[in-house]
Length: 215
Image (tube, rainbow, N blue to C red; front, side):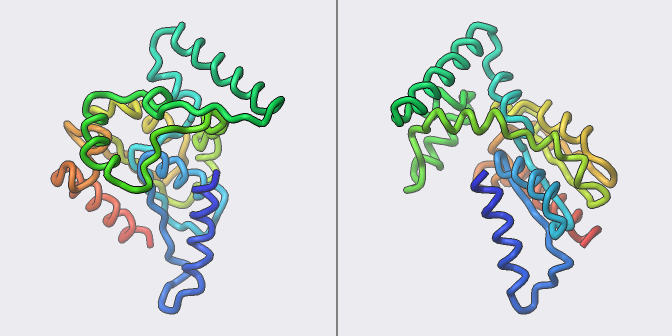
């Protein structure tokens, strides 16, 4: 994944910065960045402490979990494979609105309109090839490789975009030391201070305490 490679490069860059102790580098990721935090932690021993917040830890499981009726998942799979066949035989990508790929709850739609869509980097469509890549991306499978380096996993109690099971399952896969933190009464985007200052403060405090404990 490109974002994971960016994280490797960021660690490499930090090693060149005067005043940075290369033996005290931690990694932090939110949402799909939380997936990357686990992945990078598993393969880069330079990451001494890992914090994953509301992360997606099995891309296929995640996309299937929000398509709860069996026919929805079957139809989505078929659409992705049809697009793959077209891509490899004609070189033509298949674009889909992000709302048809990443199924969202009302709260997430509200945050997207009030915050994300105002960014010049916001993408309204994705190539279905990215869905194939997401299905193959399963950081939970490599999470046991992180130990004995410490892992903190934070999740929102009422996360309807990334189901809570994503956090619980990955936490179980991690070795010790590890810690699981629930943001009470919070939804997926509440970890951002400009959305929910209280939940955002809990998230940052837990992360900083974890770093202070182990770095």
